[in-house]
Amino acid sequence: MNKLQLLLPVGLIGMLMTGCNVHPKMHSAGDTQSPLEVEVFKGEFATVNSFIFSNGQSIVVMDVQRKRYEAKKLLELVKKKDLPVSHILITHGHTDHFTGLALFRDEFPGAKIVVANQAIKADIKAYAMYMDSFGETDVGPVLEPSIKPKSRDNPNGFDYTHSIEVLDADSLTLDGGGTLELTTSYKQTEAPHMTTVYNKDLNALFLSDLGYNQVHHWQGDDISWQDIANWRAELLKIKTDYSGRNPSVYPGHGDATNLNLIGAMVQYIDDYRRIVTNAKSHKEAMEAMIELYPDYGEADFFLKYSVLNHVKEKY
Image (tube, rainbow, N blue to C red; front, side, top):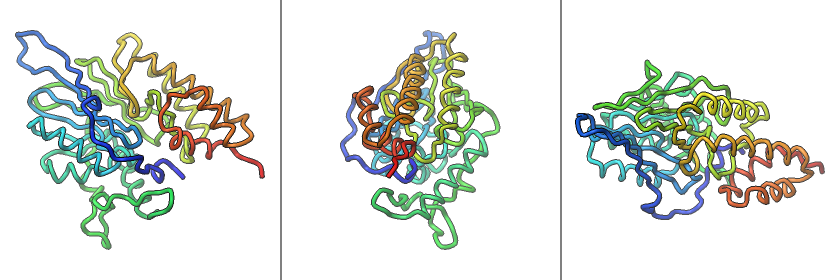
């Protein structure tokens, strides 16, 4: 099963104050622009992160969770800021980043739902159609009703074709100031197409799902060995490109950190390849990875289905 099929509930708990971290960039007293801030919403489900960028005048929300109950918590956090939402930016086409779209569209009808390029828009629609056709199984959740694709048979569904806009530049500027620099020139890695975001005011790099911090990487059956090799290479390139800036680093899964995350992820990829290519069973691979990474999250989810993909047991 792939990541989209397997984003299953792992328990519903309330959002704790520690689940949202605010990181402001302070300006001098003479500045007219308010400090740019980013607040991280840590979804309990699949440890997926969403981000709220604000400058005191407007808000951009990046990625909107997998489960509706998580998206509602994110929505309430945004509403408490009492600022207009100008854009909802989706970084890539996995459902743990876009299922909350209908909820946000209904609450903020003036906000533009945007992606960085046409390929990501196509990915989102394709994955939504795939999930809708898959249906309910013992391991795959049915797609949230509000996000099922609009069609002749489902006229009240989400209109992916007309509701999502493609930005005409490789940046997105908040109303009132603060620019998010968007990069999409990545090979196929954890997803077919990916957006990372950099903001110079915060000196912060948002890796989306190129970044996992103390969370087992998703390497399930939609992730080939070539994708993993691409992922490793892109991470090293990112480290080279940003090493002179020494930014704060925000992964798609796990806590914010620094560029040392790149080295840790490359080591994880190398350990994973070594272990699973030599393991004679799923159990052997799982035990070896958990022994090396005992504190990593999603062992029973991301790691389990990654091992099922890459360890070929002989019967």
